Amino acid sequence: MTSSTLSSADARTKNALTDHVLACSDPEVLHLDGDLTFSSGFMPRTAADRPLTGAHEAWEQLAGQLPALTTSPHAQRIIADLPMIPAGVDDLPDSQLKRAATVLGAIAQSYWRFGIGPMYLARGEQISPDLPAVVERPWRQVNHRLGRAEVTLSTEDCFFNNFTFIDADRIAADGTYRIEDARIELIRPKVPAFGNAAERVFISAFVEVNSVIAPVVPLACRLAEVLAEGGPDAHDEISTLLSGIADCARGAMKAFRRVSPRKGSATHCDPVELAKTFAMWDVPAPGYPTGPSGSATPVLHFFDALIGRSRYDTELGRFAHHLRDNQLPAKHRVFFDLVRELDVRGYVTGLADSAPARYREVSAAFNEVVSSFAGDDGFLGVHKGKVIDYLGVGTVVGRNQSTAHDQIFIADATWTGMADKLQQARDERTIRALDENQT
Image (cartoon, rainbow, N blue to C red):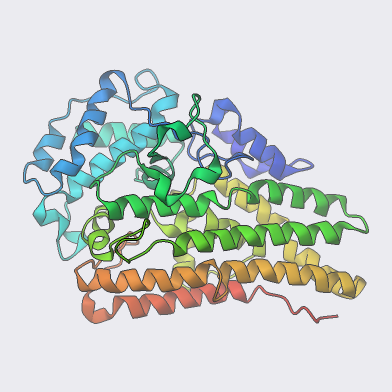
């Protein structure tokens, strides 16, 4: 099996969603970018902290030094002193590709950003995009072997493939774990750049948010089956499935809400510390693709596909749509495309004339999904408030660029402008709600 087996055209069978998940569970494609299983959803199926071996252990040793090099004037020289270690198919096993992508990506970002000068440049465009060949060449090989079109530190590398448990007993001998245990307080990054609490909580929050939606994978697969089978009682199960999916969105909202600026909280993420360290560090150098972003996470793209979002006219809408190609793994892109093709909203509206009572029941469940995802009290509503608070502090202390390469100064009122952009992007989702009284 090769990456070509993950294309939409090859996934079309009686239950394309289920078949696609099963195909992604095949050991032969485990090394390709991303993961997709019934048990862990869009998250990796293993969380073992297994360092690279052999000659590639030199990358691991350097990665372990990164927190000590953050303000060192010698950081670039130390990184450039790495030996040239190839990462071709005969040099690096498939099983170590994802770890290598995280390690090399962290080293590349650190080369660009470490040292007092590069970390606090007023404009990200002033960063030199140069990388020593000992980093750039194997990093390019690893990204190519993962199936990516471009070289980047992706959301997968930075967050999802970069977590393990503080308590090693939570990981089974084969590296698997209980998805329910992937919570902020229990996990840490495998390859920290700074080793501070803000970085740990921020990375862990991404993991928890996308772990709690793991059940949407089997729920969506069952939804596809019921829609295909039809029958007089289909609307009852469809309503139940949609309510279960809405519960997942509410779980993601609660997880995101737990990121706290309050000292003493078990999930405390200091906004100043975050803005001055990790939030600066993960911005890529000019000429490289967009870095890790919340707009490239499964929680957004799954729910957009399910509710049939059709408008991407806003700035953030276009940005999220752009990230599909250079940030989302092919395994996830195909799954989201197949979810969109279910046309759940079309099924519901089709009941308005033929079965008004059933329409009211199912449209209420569909609207529950829209609200729990994009409503004021849903995931994106909480996301807006939390992001604006952190952006406000970040802008004041000098964070003038995001992973989207926005170049903004304090005078531009970063947080208020972003609030408007986030609201406009939410509006493109909430308009998908249905009139429950339509007949």
